[in-house]
Amino acid sequence: MVHGGKSMFGGSMCGKVRGMKQAPDFTLKDQDGKDRSLTDFRDHWVVLYFYPKDNTPGCTKEACAFRDAREAIAEYGNAVIIGISKDSPESHQKFAKKHGLTFTLLSDPDHAVAAAYDSWDPKFFFGKTLLGTKRNTFLIDPAGNIAKEYHGVDPSIHASEIITDLQQHQNH
View 1: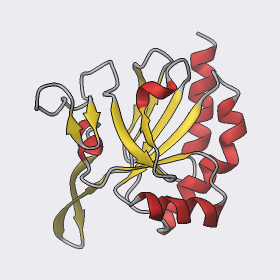
View 2 (view 1 turned 135 degrees about the vertical axis):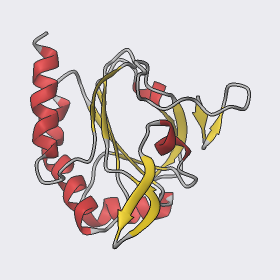
View 3 (view 1 turned 60 degrees about the vertical axis):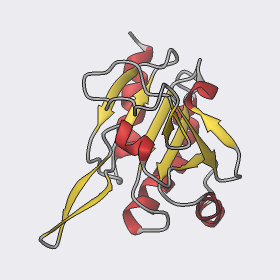
View 4 (view 1 turned 45 degrees about the horizontal axis):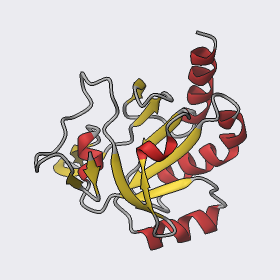
């Protein structure tokens, strides 16, 4: 388990998601400074999304789309939305207030959780290679298993993709 960016099992970081079925657990601070763990949401479907930075155009578009689709997402398996970036809890609180976000935002300042979910990797920007958060989402079932991965999502349509996939999982 990743706890505040540190592994809870004897010092080594948990493996990346690729090829894993069980979602790596973690404990991070939310926008109110409270510790939140993935296991807090067992018995719910979880939409766990990683985004680069609060208040940037693409991240704001994605967060507001999740905000607007929250009720539709929640009706399938009592699903919850959790956003994770390296921003501080204070930054998340301002971001949530400014845009009326009513879901959990978690602070991953050393990007250990993003790395565990294969969402902290090299990005190519104006001919340079930089490390950064990839815009990835993981749909996690009530037992804590990864049901679907979305890599490099389009923020303008992603919330509707999640609703469609939650509907499909409910019908199986």
